[in-house]
Length: 79
Image (cartoon, rainbow, N blue to C red; front, side, top):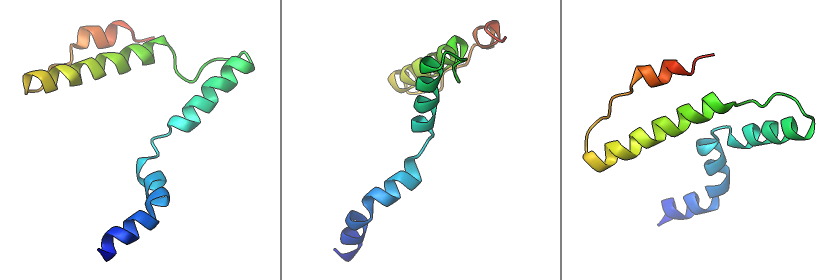
């Protein structure tokens, strides 16, 4: 029980330390780009790639095996 109490007391500090993936900073930069009318930190190609990989992950879970990354789709959008 003592271990659970320690984890509960320090949950917020540990959560931020372990799960900070930079989303807060990315969203702040995105909002700043909109407000100050400058280039966004992520563009449509970044969005396409994120959605493409997420969809492959979902398909992988459905089928129970790895899904191939089609490089023709990946490289089609290289700028």
